[in-house]
Image (cartoon, rainbow, N blue to C red; front, side, top):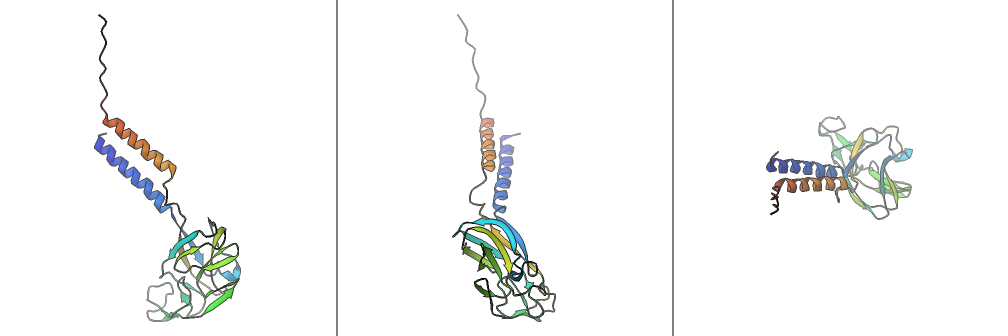
Length: 203
């Protein structure tokens, strides 16, 4: 294998290693309006641990909708805070122009007042609003759970997908660094010509 081909191979390897680390920083969770309603106390356990004050970063596609019951109760993760009209291709399945959501105000539960139908997080029984885009400080130390904010779950439907930064992108994993270092050392070795050792004659 030539030096140029070796360099290209190493470049591909390094891009794969670092892209793997970067992609691993975002984890996605499906949160169901019915199964994960705050009224049922059965949130999605993300398995992500935070210390008090750590920033929790994430987002939800604002066009990803879930439902709190009969029309007009469709909303995104921000909750039922405004009028929403069907596009003809959204999750509601309604004809374009049909009103599918509206303002329903806030619901107070477990010490939090938040819009009906909003995405909320919970750590150690402390609830806090997340919505479609969030960068909030963890209110306590513990594992994050995710909920659909509602007073009952029997007629809820659909789910949203929540992407959360788990913080792995800051530093590459040691294995990746070791592999890249080994590759660089190998290339350096390939680039050196073996030295010629002359024989010593005895006179």
